[in-house]
Image 1: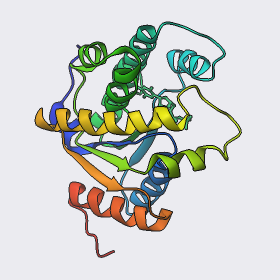
Image 2: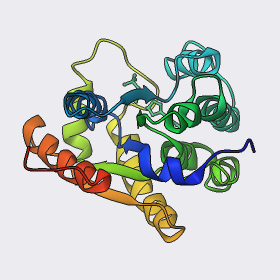
Image 3: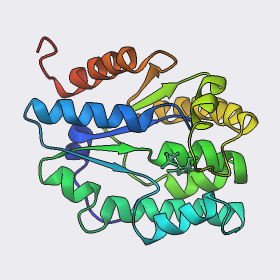
Amino acid sequence: MPSYNTDELKKRFIVIEGIDGAGTTTQMKILAENLRARGYRCVTTAEPTLGPIGKLIRSILSGERCVAPSTVAYLFASDRNEHLFGSNGIVEQVESGSIVISDRYALSSLAYQGLTCGEELPLRLNGSFPAPGLTLLFDIDPEIAIARIKRRPQKEIYETLEFQKHVSNMYRTMADKLQSQGWNIVHIEANADIDTVRREVFLKVFGFLGADTTR
Ligand code: TYD
């Protein structure tokens, strides 16, 4: 594992997680804009990444290519390794003083690949990646989430109500597991409208950063 400064990641690496349609991407953008307006240096990023491994993953998720479920678990872990340690990656950004917010990280693999290829492989592949300082896990009713996804033009292989119900349960199980290993995971009630969720997200993140919430 490449070297990195755990303290810097603990201070400035934030992850947003949740089932498909939970609103993580929207809230990440709102949060980042607000933090920048407050003078923080803040970068947003996502997994699967825009790099070559992320693109290969996307072609699998769209149904264009088909590989064994365990291969998908390896690909997500490789994409994550590059995301963390590659040029301009999470570690580099955090160590240069930026707050990095990622739309998904290792907990996604434990939840999704934990279902498609069993718990053991994703736990093993992701076990040595560093913990973020804060993970916000969006709790949302899968029925509400799937209704949002249905409005999108592009569909992915995991986007069925049945599967998302399982992902939702797996997220809870795996979040408890990681919490018992010291991860700082906070649940966000994400059934509400964008502004209500935004307020809850701000509260948690400002608390984490030690920011002034009265502004
Ligand atoms: P998603 O955040 O939905 O991207 P977009 O909104 O651009 O489609 O992520 C794509 C899918 O990838 C989503 O269904 C969750 C899945 N995924 C995994 O299965 N394992 C992982 O480790 C990650 C990061 C994502």
